[in-house]
Amino acid sequence: MVNGDSGAGSVPPPVDAELRAALAAAGVTAREPVTPEGLAAWQARDAATRPRPGPAQLRDGGRFEVAELRAPGPAGAPEVRLVSARPAGAGGPLPLLYYLHGGGMVTGNAWSVLPRLLRELAEPLGLAVVSVEYRLAPGAPYPAAVEDGYAGLLRVAERAAELGVDAGRIVLGGKSAGGGLAAALALLTRDRGGPVPAGQLLLSPMLDDRDRTFSTHQLAGHDTWDRTSNATAWRALLGERYGAADLPPYAAPARATDLSGLAPAYVEVGSAETFRDEAVAYADAIWRAGGSAELHVWPGAFHGFDTFAPGAAVSRDARETRVRWLHRLLAG
Image (cartoon, rainbow, N blue to C red):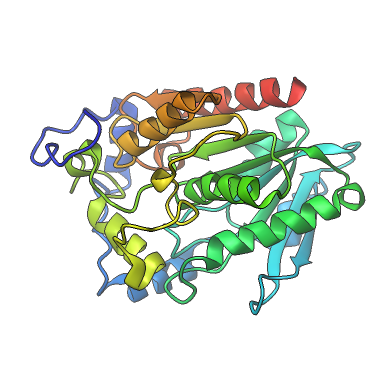
C-alpha cells in the first residue's frame, strides 16, 4: 500500500550500516525539523554556511570552462541567472544536463551543486551542465521557481549552437526539490510545446505536497528530511494554495493525471526516505501512461545519503548507476 496514513507509528526500514556510521560521525541522527517559525533562521544559516564557489574555483585550475549567463525572466520578473560549465577542451556540440538544485524550494543556489556534478557526471560523460539560480520561497512562491526554470530552458535551447550544446540531447535533472522541479518542468514544456528534453534525471524528487504516503508517516522523526520539514517547505512554496484540490501538476507533479508523452525518466530514492513512496508511485504512473522510467530504491538509504556518505558502497553504486543510465540515454 502506497497511499494512506497507516504508516504512522510503523517501524522504519533499517539504515545501511555505512550510512548510519557516517551520520553518527557527523553527530546527526535526524535533523531538527524545519518549522514555519524556524524557517527564516534556517534559511539564514543555510545562506551563511552553504558553499558558493565562484567561477575561478569551479574552473579547478583549467579543468573546466565556466561562464555565467542571463535569461529574460518570466513576465514581470527579474532575469534568471544560469551557470554554464563543461570539461575544458571538449568538442561540441555536447549533450547538456540542465540542473535544478535542491533545498526544499527554500534554500540552495546554482553554484554549490556544480563541483560534484562536474566531477561525477560532466567529466566522465563529456557533458555540459547548466545550473539554474531560481527564486526561492516564501519570498517568491509558486510558480516562480518552475517559471524561472522554463525561462532558462528556452534561452539555453535558443542559444544551443552558441553554447556548444546539442538542443536535441538536453536532460532535465535535479535532486530533492530540484528533482521535483525537473519533473514539473518536463510537464510544463510538454504542455506549452517548448523544448523537448531527451530525459529526466529525478533524484529523491520532492513531488507531492499532500504528505499522505505511507513512507512520509513511517519516516516521521527519523529521516534527515521528514514530513514536518516537508510540510513547512510546501507551505512556503504554495502559500494560500497549500492543500488546494485544484493545485496544478507544475506545482506538485504527483498531482498530474496525464504523464504521457514525457521523456524517459531515471527515478532514484532511498528505502529509508520520506519521499520513497511518492517517487515509486511517480515511476509507476509513467509506466501506466506508456512511458519509460528506470526506478532505483537504494536499500537502507535516507534522504541525501550520498552527500552525507559519498564513500559508502551504496553511494558509489548510486553514482555509477546514474552514469550508466545517462550513457545509455545519450548514446542511443
